[in-house]
Image (cartoon, rainbow, N blue to C red; front, side, top):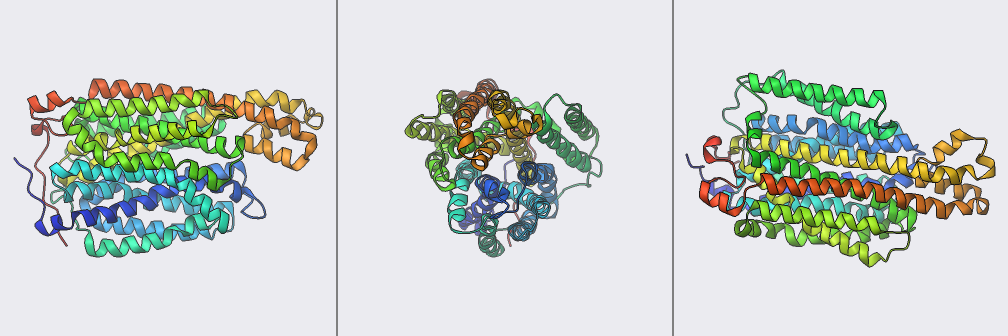
Length: 536
């Protein structure tokens, strides 16, 4: 059966609706990257909260944990109660939590507020993509998803520059307070412009599958984060990861057996759907891991201010802005396989460049690599996301969006945790001999361990001691660059795997033409009839 047309009144304002959804998405994704440049200020006992390294890790990870754990559940809930309603709830919660974060008085208060921000953000991201799938006809949907995907990448890239500007003129809480006016404008526009839509036949609620998905995803992501903190071979970390994997396996087994599944696991039988989901996870693994170590490189090794660091990341955002909306046209001419694999290859080669970066590498080389990576991302995320969304009917768009975004978030968390763990352990092994050579540290292994945990900790010691510790500056910079190279090798390998998956799993142009498949390469008969969105 053919997909019903979009309501004419909704169709007329579809691009206005998209602009509101992109605004909502920008503020949520922006917050995940804007905090990076503020961490050093928040750690300051005078200008900030005096947060410890552990506090800062949890201020970052608490958001990721809540976000990843609830993405799938919110997506399914939006299909049931109405996506506009859930979007408004999510934005409201996010705004309130942003206000609480800005005026936190202790690190613990900030961590709790960040958890609440993750809860709100998890309701926003999958809902925006689900609404796009219900507002746009198939012929325009790929272009709209391209713009949506570009907004994700742009928000990640402009977060540091926004944070740098704010920190230069205001106090640390301004990086959260800036969300409030954006949220207010977005909510007001949503009320008047965005239509509501839901699955008219949602079936019974899945009381077993939904809790299993929440606990399983949360445990898995928490285990990854914990492994980055204490080491990947520690029994505690491995146990938590294993528990998360076990719960997710039970979730899949249950979803296969129940007659009212929250997740249609049969979608993963289609090679192109599974390949698209995998590519999304892998490219965000590489992106988030890269921005994590690159931010430290620019500020700690090169001595750039947060503002200059943010400015230097502009090419990454500019390339995505330029090329994301054009990827749909390339897919029509060349097919998903060629466009996505080429984009992934470009990302991988750009990552590989950082293996040759030293303490004095010309900045123009980094800028070219960042632009190339943005161009690659712009030709990976839109077609991969469109492939996922084309595999599910409109009435379950929230479910498809939740799958895509959950994998994206888990991939990003893995990138930071895995590559961050490599970075930390390699830096520690390189800098420890230099720290042991300092007379006042020779008999204090505990302090040496603390100072070797990060280049910022080493530099803080140098600033405190003064000229007597200046001899540590060069060894610290060299140790970080060596550690960064090892992390780059990991991200390069992940990118190469993504290229292979795209080549082997995604459909080419001829396959789509010959077999009459949708944008994802999933046979039309494998998808159920879609429904018309309910206009306000």
